[in-house]
Length: 250
Image (tube, rainbow, N blue to C red; front, side, top):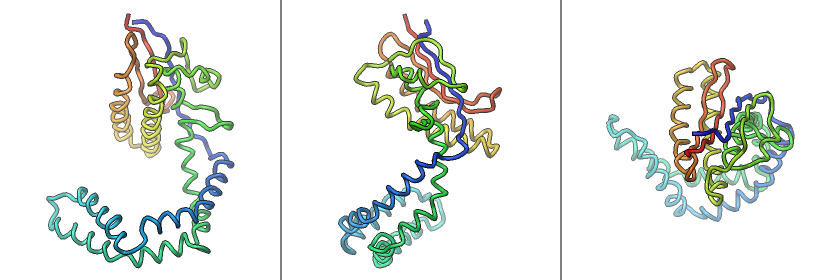
């Protein structure tokens, strides 16, 4: 086989979230207050709808998480279902107090904004224009799906060799990106959390699980190409990375 293009990018976590992203998040969310309220009340106009669309639906799904070998598993599931079925008045008063006119939703957005700062982790994988450009997660999938613009965003944490190439059917490439990027983001973010906590085996398990899914992308390569798409951990750099490669099979 002959190598066409290969990319490796180290994951470097941004120290803070770009301020405009935080402000846009808060403003957008606050402006959604009345729409959220109207949507909830339209979907759940009364107690009958609450029982059908929230209580019973929740119980059906939640019950699947209860280990049937638990002592009194049946009563545990029934307790959840019964208690939730009786919760309409509490739910409605809570919705009114939070999302209704004059509700505390905007204040809660402000008080919880610091938690949104964790968005710097996924942004460190995908990037943010115009602040950061594209970062390792998107670059890894971009170079094997023919996005030649990626070459303009290479930095000190990136290595690119060869010619950016679309190794998939032209009609499929955009969907490959849409599928693969969230998988890469989830894998790198969770693995980074584990790495920061010194949970080496858990970090490596996340990497293995993520790559088992990315293997599905490799199997969609067009005839004549072999694709590698993976995340990993670089011992020398002490950083996680995203890696991709295209080779010809002839």
